[in-house]
Length: 145
Image (tube, rainbow, N blue to C red; front, side):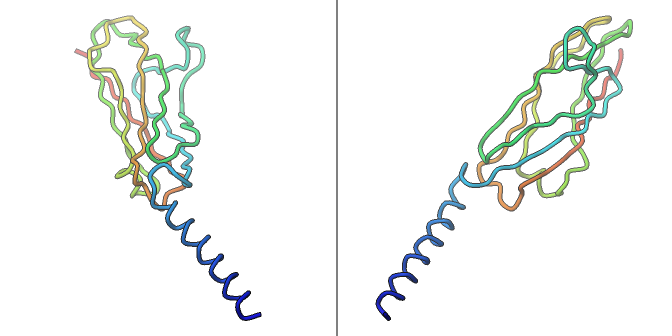
């Protein structure tokens, strides 16, 4: 009976050790969920026909080391070029800012009276720990020249 208890205890410790080992591997076990609220002084839409306004982005479920992208349509309905700026704020939890990167491909001024597709990509660091859900505000700011 004592040997059987020792075998069971060894198996339990082995399983626990394996789970702990997996938790330190990048891209395993942990899945993160997020939604980003969009704040902008320029019109942003989900579609090129500009019928479905964007107010938030649900990034879905991401694992460490993954990235996901969305395409949005920016509308410059002014008579001058718009220089765009992208920023983030109000991270929840606050530590999430150290493990996430938001990028976009809008590196040029938007021509007047145009609809321009822009790709936003959210990347999650390989070594994110302790975060299962997060949120943040996405700030798009236009300056007209």
